[in-house]
Length: 457
Image 1 (cartoon, rainbow, N blue to C red):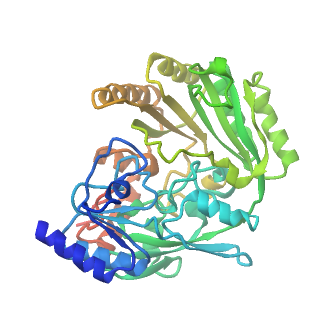
Image 2 (image 1 turned 90 degrees about the vertical axis):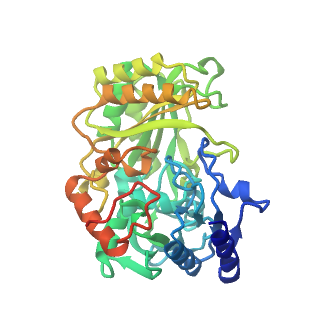
Image 3 (image 1 turned 120 degrees about the vertical axis):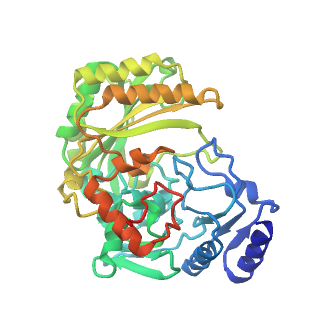
């Protein structure tokens, strides 16, 4: 195997335009580090591709040698799929070209761009595409999962604004997938993850959006207020999307010192429309209780992404799910479980869905949870391997207590979980269709270092 790796490194350094990083190289440790901590994996080589031709060469090498292949965009995989022990990491982060067509209101974006880079560049032209809630997330991973962010109720998921994709499939071919060319592949890419090839470029629709009314509203963590926040989000105009975090208040400047460590409701609200209308839409939230902090204000859209510390690599366990409603009883359950844990960082994150996302037919894309009402993400940081199972048990019990009728899951927030959980991301009919597409484009399951959908047999 070592001779095979040595030959592969030599071959790639001669044939690819991008950078090849081997274990002996000074840049190796930085190149193998991903966003989440707790993954100390050592790939045999890392290729920081420069273009689709580089990607095709790496895919061919993996196919011909049998070396395991992991694909990385922004490195935010909760399951650690962005890196592996042994084998090859195909790193797309150097591929960040962006071509914006302001007249057509569309953009071709390479898959290594982050959501923040794309959003900042588009904002220069008063345009936007909705991604998630974190600027450093790579557009490759979030797009292939679906993309649920601050424009989800107004403009739908990221994939609802995807016009085409350039994909290197397992045979090494560079294909364009859209409504006309390879429509089966285009359908699968919109929510099916990295199972079908390496997406190297995306063509997105851009919407007019320059400034928004948005920011943080901090409210007391009591059941009536929590249930009221969710009810207000559900009743709000579709221009308003938000993320409601219930957690111990972090020690950050925007939070009064006396609240640090106390349970609070941190609602990040974004109104993508006229400021006056936004103030009216936010008023019901402000009326629920005297805000502990109110930072909602007009801002350029890119400012919805908070500043990040590149040295921050949290170790966390979590669970993603959908539920139908949060009444006072459910709100009490959420607060009780958060109070019962002593983890320094623990959170119940709640996102009210609906709007434009819900108007897309369930079978139009591989993301099929169009009718889901509320997405819940439960998480706890842990400190060291002995603490991890303790926090995992708390998350599991929390999820069990909240479970309602909707048994689905969002693939973009799945962690390192079993195949049963992957099945929950895709209803049976969707799964069968995805497996057929997989058999067409990746019959040997070359792309399996992911939330895997094996090819139909």
